Image 1 (spheres, helix red, strand yellow):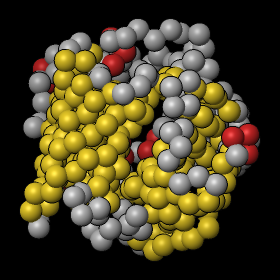
Image 2 (cartoon, helix red, strand yellow):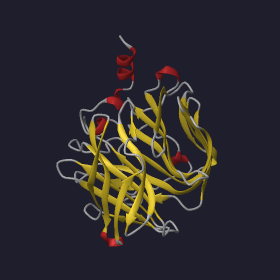
Image 3 (cartoon, rainbow, N blue to C red):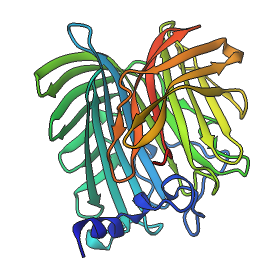
Length: 345
């Protein structure tokens, strides 16, 4: 058996593509499922939920260097379970995958890590907060003060994160519906991080500063069976407001959005209120991917063009997808991040 086949067998929840993107439309079975009305319990909910099938800690950042050059940064830790339980040693059914990336206007640097839970190689603890896989880490005394590190073959970063606003709950107080059939996740964000630190690229070390956005989400069947992928936007406007919006693509598209005031007050918008329309496409990794978008939330006067900083920001990972920083023009200026999944070659 070759190494690639062994990896696919060990990490099949990440690689399976039969139902929904990456198998996320698979029936929940014996795993726990989200229900409306559950109150978040912090700091415990910053940690792992092994009775749910899939979970992630997802941080993206828009930064600039001393000369004004824009950069993007990604740090993601995914947990996927074979069974709804925890465990120790090699008995654990918990699998972990980490993605790290740095995007420049002309380069996209990517690295990936895979791990089994239960042996100390990867995990998340809620208090004090610590998320890690191998030597990659996001940790601090609490979720408001974190140090973030990762290394790849041709990049590294070491940055500090400081929260300047509250956590934001999406959907119905954190219960985020994903389809007309009712699939859902628990979903909250910290969109108010300021960032300072250092990027290490082939040309040398670069001091950077900017803003970061952390997404936390867990579920056991977050997609409907027919949903083939999503287009997800996190946008920070020059006026101080922020917006999260996504389109889940299927037989009928499903949308959701959250408008975030400068003080963190969140307003949820249901299916149909948010619209994202591809305007320009780019060929990358043998796929045609939309890298220019018209994004609208009429109820808040948003009508912007979203443009990729680097159209080649393709994640060459076990489950491939597009992820990179974007700029905004139109009714609002600003920056943000775009994630696109399910674009087949």
